[in-house]
Image 1 (cartoon, chains in turn blue, brown):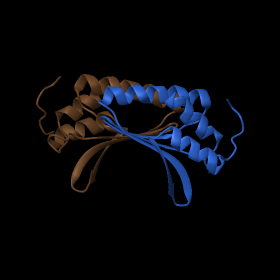
Image 2 (cartoon, rainbow over the protein chains, first blue to last red):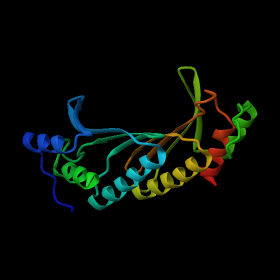
Image 3 (cartoon, rainbow over the protein chains, first blue to last red):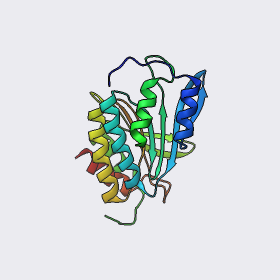
Length: 98
Length: 98
């Protein structure tokens, strides 16, 4: 899915956030990004999720910022090439949460 | 290897840092920790290393702080239960870099 990313509309962002409640919209230094924050049962469960994320990242050629300590996981996602939230982010979240 | 962690001596820390050059000693807010920082060829290579780290973490029951974006990986390691650098950190680094 190496399509050219297009900027998400406000409606598309709202739909995504309403569908996937663990994802929030944040803005820092004028750049908006999707933020995922979760406490898993333990490290093993967090890493199972990270492994799925790795496969999604490779298949979509889209990579997030990841932070983990034991059962805690944070993911920050936006599209570098457009500096916005794009269809690549939407596809990423949809595939990861499927 | 669920031994009780004991604090590393200065000599043990120096030996570890001299053996594994990608690991540095840092101190923040009075707490010392080991820091690993590396740029891999791509995300796939970074995740191969993270997968090894996951196995080491589980087998030693010792978990680091992990940060990743694409090919960039940072690891922060110290022993929460003693709030120092301990034998658990030494075993972790030795197993990870083997």
